[in-house]
Image 1 (cartoon, helix red, strand yellow):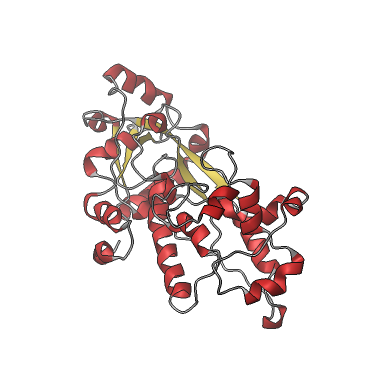
Image 2 (tube, rainbow, N blue to C red; image 1 turned 90 degrees about the horizontal axis):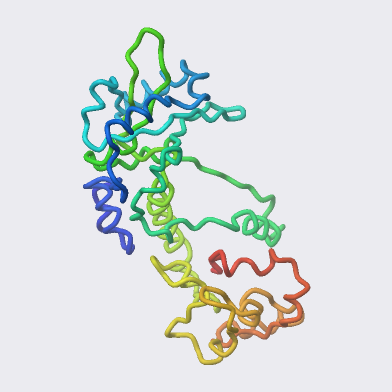
Length: 318
């Protein structure tokens, strides 16, 4: 990450600066492995898929070592490192593309014992297909065909380094090569298969998305009349949907039903997600008003779930 990430106008700037300067921590809340436990787990070896793709594992690991992402040590030397743990290394074959290395950190309980430090709110998954289909469905045909583009960051997890003292906890056993001493690979970066890798990566990518959305919409487009209802989904460590904001009116509070914490009542979902077809023209004239147009609760009961699922997924209505 860039050295100016600490100056980014985002609540996650401090967290990202710690990742850049100190690395990502990898701590466990269970007891250290004894030498006997370590030897027994090492004898288990790599996953069968890695044994069947020894040549690929050697080539891929050599490339990662050149990039400074991994280091491999003989078992006799790696066993002297404090805090060493190991997981089976596997290979996931891909269709029409290169296979990838997978670290099974759940096999010996590494994921289960990991201390989770990254905010879970960083991962905003779910409902993507529904939002894309809705955007295509409501696109203006006069502007031409709809084109989709997808960008992938190569070895995205490997862009975030670990704290050096914690790296041995994520070691993996490599396949056995005849005539060579058994090897243990230790990552210097976040691995594919560790529980903390996705939320940490998303803390970076979602920050980029937040800044891009702010610059693309909010600087020159007036606020949408429903924006205050979606605002909690854009805030770092914000309350889950259904938690009242201080700015919510008494009428909104009365519209919520007792469906449990973190859920929206039927009337609220109806008012914020479904627009009655005969009120389309009226809603345009009331766009400058704080009052929301009326919605029909009976429509929600007979509607496709896709139509009202967006409030739970944080759809940005700009």
